[in-house]
Length: 498
Image 1 (cartoon, rainbow, N blue to C red):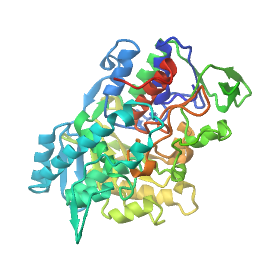
Image 2 (cartoon, helix red, strand yellow):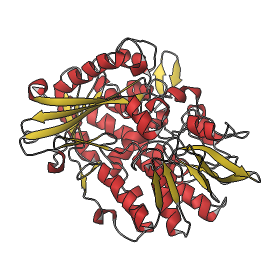
Image 3 (cartoon, helix red, strand yellow):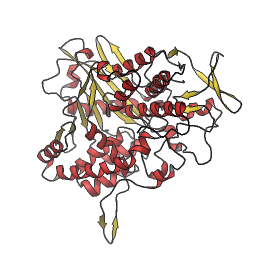
Image 4 (cartoon, helix red, strand yellow):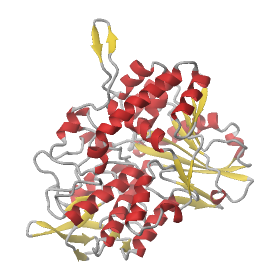
């Protein structure tokens, strides 16, 4: 196993239970991939994901690898309200967790009569897209007939009359403009794509499944931070006798008789294996295999994915207690949508005020005492910008903090210290080229939003994690682990969970 990310560990635990001896080689000194923690002066911060959707993926992992509920290993709690949204016109709304009726009522009250109903009707259509794509996109390996997913738009868009033509939304931006018909609802919708660095003007309408997942399955937090989930999965692997070798960088995948036969480490050590599972991005896996990764008809990474947007995160240590009624997650929407998207998509080199997520968990484990608060603020930016000579990352950080002040009045007066994490940190910790964010697999879009299959043309070599099917995000990483384990244990006839 190459890499100790969440997908790789999910596969490792399942394979160990099936009777395989599993050894994980991780080039850093710890597990979890991007699910990490930063500690300083009694403050603790999640530096990767801060919330979890679809916890059923990890519940299934713990039941299948030990008949033990996930909740016996971590304290999993629903976040309510799910999120608070601050819009450029000064309006705001807090959305209840996993309640369609509650969301409709909250939107009507905050944004005006009819807005809630339009959002509710959108969720009904999003559910249809979810039902159409759930199995082939999440629960089954990516089969050779994947082009059906690439060509067919599963989102049932509403006909839109425009002059003498009737059109249907093909992108997420068109769904917002033509069906939601309110810039604030459109911003709410598009923020789910922006979280993965996706430009809604180019993202297929099928991305409607992203807000639907959060609405249908809720938003969850792990007490102590999401790093506790990584710890629990790691400990489950250890309990199933998975071996971990840290500080071990794999530089080459060995072949013998036309199949993967092991790995070679940078220090020259060779480890033989019957199967090799690689939890690394396309670029690094290509180097390890001399770029012999794709056969005729395979899904290949879009060239634009080599420079996927990354996440800039600011860790804030604040004096003063968290005020009563403070919301766990606040999304501050950009005042100039076009400027934000043009910067993100490199149509403009000038940073603009971005859409910012502010996480303020009410968790004593993350602060030194009740008179302090730890806050994580994040936004996406072109992932190689911090390497430039024009201090773009520094200017972008100032904009991120400026936007966060909308959600945290008096922030600068409370600030004890802050630390900035650029995409370069993610590059070093996860191996993702330029610290890019892997997005979940999406249908339509000509296949540009799919990820390479978990199998490869080299027998015995498998892909796992966010850069392979079914893509990025904690739930998807866990699903990739289940798919790889199924393919190894059951062979090519494996058809996914039932």
